[in-house]
Image (cartoon, rainbow, N blue to C red):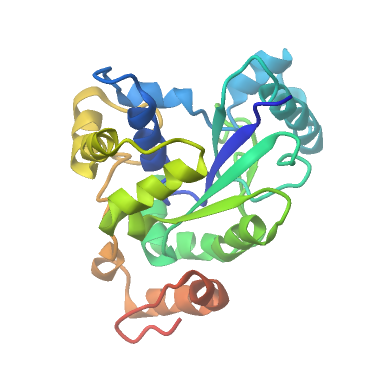
Length: 281
């Protein structure tokens, strides 16, 4: 018997941390305080310290394929009793060696329109927008390949924004619950309720409403300003920036928006995204 893992998967800057906060607030005992520091309860699956602690090895001495082999063993270990239902955050593409029916219960796949992702990811990386737009279209994009690049993270294969979505949505080995960032913004109650149902939880309406209120973007940003947030990279001034849909219109040039639309046209159509203002998708 296994408890198995629920993967909270997304391309970077698509709302993964927001969904983790909502789940932790909802599942916490009534009245119990939940801080940003508590988000470690749903850890990054590519956490180098957790990997090394579980397997007793120095990951900096391992080749990428050796890390993948040992990650597979670690995830299998995490899916075994007596551990309760396990959540892991991840930004990798689907990998049949790592994400298997034996260790996985569900994939919660969060998607956000790539125009907003590009703007938020560029700020997160502290890099130019054009460079980040290129990354979103790069099928070979890998993060933290060298230990010094992100010392607390193992290598993660992101690929392109389109390829990332397709890798999770096209696989048929593990059930997938698709969650659109924009739906969580505009229809938080039914969208979050559907997520809870998919994860196997009953829906308590007052608790659901309280979690949504506690995790409003303004509140999360205020907590970060007051107490900091360890997941904020040194390249970014803040982790919680705007949390809006469509903010890209204030930042991207028509040429940049059109580049994104052309690079990801099939995925945009599949996921129901259009680009108002003459940028064809």
